[in-house]
Length: 228
DNA sequence: TGCATACAAAAGATTACCTCA
DNA sequence: ATTGAGGTAATCTTTTGTATG
Image (cartoon, rainbow, N blue to C red; front, side, top):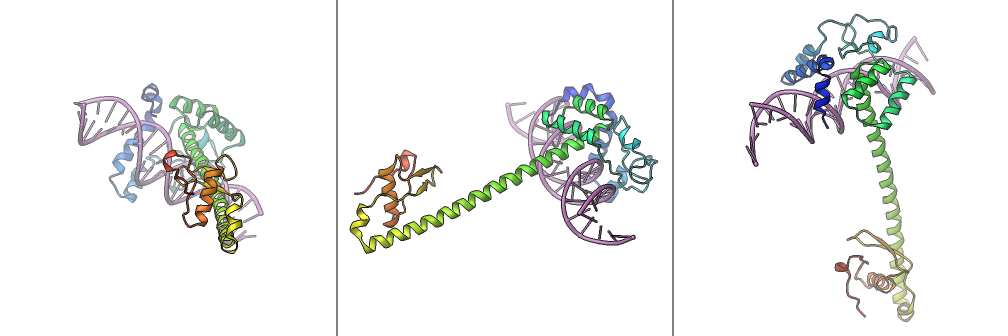
């Protein structure tokens, strides 16, 4: 996780970035307004022009001094160029986290402060995770819909079998097993009742109709002895 | 060896700026 | 010209892992 060796190697160049963190620890003991005061740059950044009027304060810096705030404390927002974004994206694809050496090199290549590269990677990881969460959520939603539909179908099938059993028990006893998929709640595997397990699945389906509600389980321990 | 502490880095949450319809 | 939504850089807080005494 943390590369102390790398850190030590860069201790000189990063010394300015360590200072704010130390301040931060002290600041943790203070209330928010006091903290903000503590964290304000000692020398206000000179630029207070319109956004984008002079990006040099945001792009040119080679150290991690805070140069992103105007005199009034308002944030200046950097807009990465397409080229910068592309390089960052490529780098992210290669390794989603950077060691200090890579970070510094990337920052130098792009003319950004290493803190900005670091922030970009943090946000990028967050976006990736959010996207993945959305994908997972969508997948689970589909699963839920499928299972709900399957459950509805099975309920209907059981109902029909019960009706058939009442109307013509003889035909019910000799009918082929229902064409259902059955999921074992224990091992969570699905099997087709018409396939290899036909004898036990027939029993299971019939058991459900007969009130037993048995399922087919792939685990030997869960297999019920068939009643004839 | 186990524990407390400090530190660094990353994740998570939030804010604020900017663009665009 | 105004406004609301969405994207995202920046900031703040919490969590986690490691080193050290």
